[in-house]
Amino acid sequence: MIGEALAAFDDQVIVISVPEDGNHILFAFKERHFEPRWRWVHNFAKELRSRHGLDFPAFAHQLERSTRLGLARREGRRRR
Image (cartoon, rainbow, N blue to C red; front, side, top):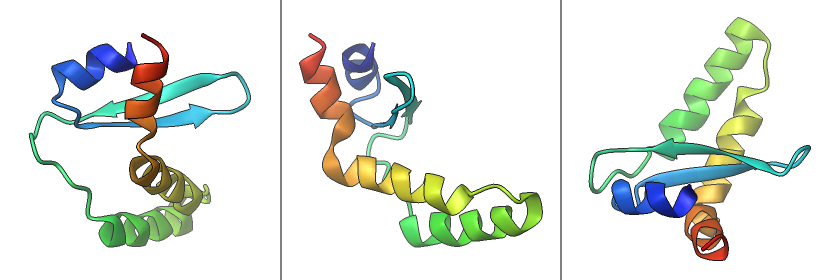
C-alpha cells in the first residue's frame, strides 16, 4: 500500500515504523510540494506534551527522521 500511496499522492507521504509489530503508520498530503515546518511541529509537540502528558516530542522527532531518511520511498520500493 505504501507504493500505491506514493503514486496517488505524488510522493507526498510520511511513513513511520511501528517496531513492536512490524506495521507502519502512513500520513499522506495532497499538497504537491508539502514540506512540514519542523521547528513549528517540535514546538507544538512540546505544548501538547504539557497539556496531555504524552510524549509528542518523541513522535515529532520520529516523523522528521522518517522524512529525512526517505522511509516511505524505501518501503514503497521494497514491497513491490
